[in-house]
Length: 282
Length: 252
Image (tube, rainbow over all chains, first blue to last red):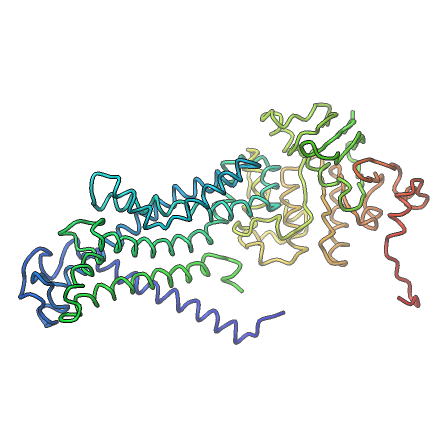
């Protein structure tokens, strides 16, 4: 069956739209996060105005219940979200992919045992594992939150990596590589990782979104970045008491959080199409 | 001394039933041998043993007089350079994320073959009738027949002495199959070929000698024309009777 030309063009346009929209949203957050390293409208701890001020030219997003500039807090929240997301996904990716690849090479009872262990770990929500790790550590801080989320994400990544790698290892080009004298580490580097990467990268991007949400949840519960770090979760938690009198305090961090997660998901979808040579030229 | 000498080889997965039992045959230098059998007769298992990917449960496999030992890395490197394989499915035998140049050059890199790899890749592509300008393209940009030629180029790039073909024409359409059989025929002038297939027509066109495999045992060996014209074993007769025949004017 062939795809009608106009449908194929539409589909390609839709794919490029997701990539552009995803890049725009994530890019905006990235630029804002980098900008906070050198400039913010106000000092994040400065009581720059009156309590719960409405948006104005001076305070574009208003002020919080202490009179701090909300836009400044949200901009710094962008940096915290991207830092936590990137670091947690990096930890989850390295740990999970390594574990998944080792499990993919296992056979018989060891394979069954590893698959069962991963399934059991996945049964626990990432946030719950992260909360346990934070609770078991000395105290809530950004590094603990990153490590906790990375550890919580790793079984999800490991299970996917195992499934994808097992599928690749069954291909004739792996046997051809073996008969060509390619060593197992080189086979993993040359054939397995590049072939599992499209599937894995989409999942990692989705995990990035989940990590951002989980970090916000930890901060909301007081288990994330401690004050004065302006995490979006903490801003939401602080705004809940004034949500009816000054809703902007809850709406703006919410919009920031949602826009970053949607942007990451769109970017993941667009990158998946772009990374796959067979799909991109269809 | 035979190039490949399979002597009394047995094989079973774990404690399961025997896949191969007391299998013996040789492939001489420069010879083209066909191995015919139904699906499940043990053809692919035999090739895996002959490639050193698995150890036989019993018996020995010798290549150029030396016993094949998959655990001996240095001897296996020498062996890999001299024995290569072409698989049945041209779609799963090429890494979709590698360009043709990298695919064909893999044995040269992995076996540390000295020389100008790019020139050797171009020579291999040329030998299988492909344009040498295709090195920067991906496998999905080629037809099934072209992909099989790329797989053959990868197999012959380090000039092996023995080429194993595992149902290498079975997944191709008729006209492409004929062209690939012709390609194997031309390659047969420079290297030995063990052509494993259930396609008796292809074996008849390509191989001087044929082995008939039934349930892991060789039941008949001989000159291809003789075996196909006057089969001695009932299984060979059944195989030949099962070949579909179409004649003009014959009602299906």
